[in-house]
Image (tube, rainbow, N blue to C red; front, side, top):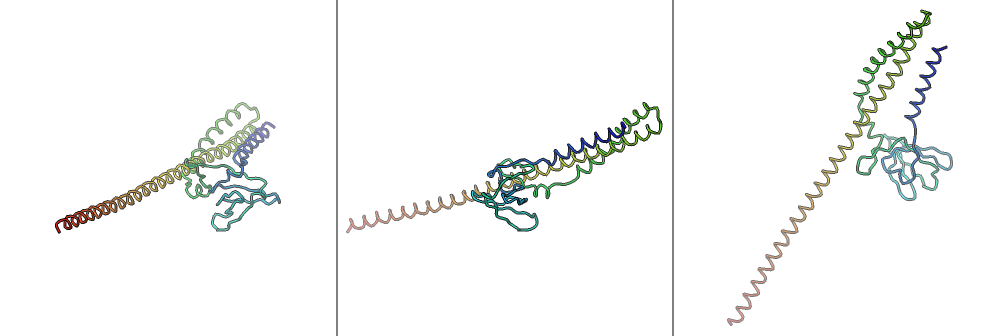
Length: 231
């Protein structure tokens, strides 16, 4: 009986953890920025999911497949609800697409945390199961309870460690994208500065040439006036 209660309790906790990961947040129309992965429910009952490509005052353009250019236009007055799992900002007010995160994300921490977590969870749950086993009078039940505790504890611990590793990989991917965008923006600023500098140098050169021509023209006029007076 106690064994079933333990397994049921761990199972219920796992469901709460998984449910928490899958929670979606409602968005208003203006929050559905380009690159945001959203789910849209229309007034007709249709559900559409994908990446926002354009957000105009009267309609949204949605890309429903990462690998296909299948764009869908959805009129604003047809939208009943917009939701998303999460919106990640790049630090400059723009959304980082979940598809970009997936492309950037590795699995090194996931593997490390999974293997390490499995070992730690096995050791901890086996130790706890052994203590409970020693406190029970029935050897067979105690042995069964010990291995059940070890199996369930190892499975749950491995899952939690793997989830932490996946979160770590995701965070590193987000930071890498932010760094890339920062460097790209910085390069663009430097490029614009060089263009402005080049244009300014060209204007300065043209101004200097014009001033030189005006000076030559002035000297020529003065010479003509002097020649007239001599005559």
